[in-house]
Image (cartoon, rainbow, N blue to C red; front, side, top):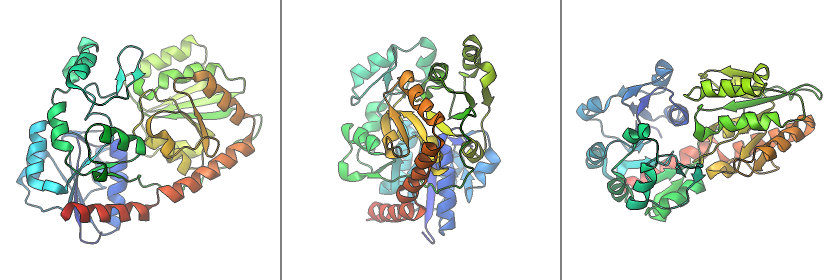
Length: 378
């Protein structure tokens, strides 16, 4: 990577969610390997100062337009307007590569599930069908709907694209991308040492880490917790519009005294190493699920709904448990199993560290990026 110039194109300048954590961590690795890494974002977000420290230079789109820097790779991490996309395509050509972190490109509603019942969708984008589905959303959400998906897909399908999971690779191919132009490159994760699991008889320390929105399924967690036969205590770490609803739900169910709500953390490692198990109750089809993989890196087992790209880092019975989506009873059974068996928690946790070390090592990532730059430049 020595001497390479790489540009990351996003929306938030700060830690709005998993995308920005991924970008910050990746930029630090690339810079350590000798690359210059710049960021272009539109909107400030929490932790902006720390986020900016991960990059050599930070631009707004207007500042970038005035910059004459020639980049070896322009990594598009969040879809812009179609007009902005055309401008970047004209400037960067084949060196503009789409990183598919979410479902925005082929789902006007972005969540990739049907509004009523939040039933996960597995179809390709269709202008008429998807417009009808999007229109079924509550009117307050209409202003957030994208209307340029057909044009975006036509433009993007000819690009190289990067995905973090086979699940997302299949989604892009289903939506018109050429298979040979979709590259699966896992994130950068390294094993982290942590304390031993708590002793038998003590409460199981359960963690949820993520945005407090319906797609992440934090509102499903209380139902699983109420089904537990074992002693437990839980931390729900994250911010989002659903927090008041979740706090009220905990009070109604009589479990508020056992749940601690913690706002966004600059570094989630401390929370991960302090828990016994991470719960991952996502409703939507996770493109990857970074917080779950981070838990595995910290040697913690994960109990997760089997959605989207979760299988990329969670093997059932190896480093945690997969349960059917939305099945809170099955989640509770697995949590009870872990509560009564610290040795099992240790075995699964250590297997998670090994899995992360094998699949998401920095050297693998750098090798993939080097080959991708060569393809985009040829």
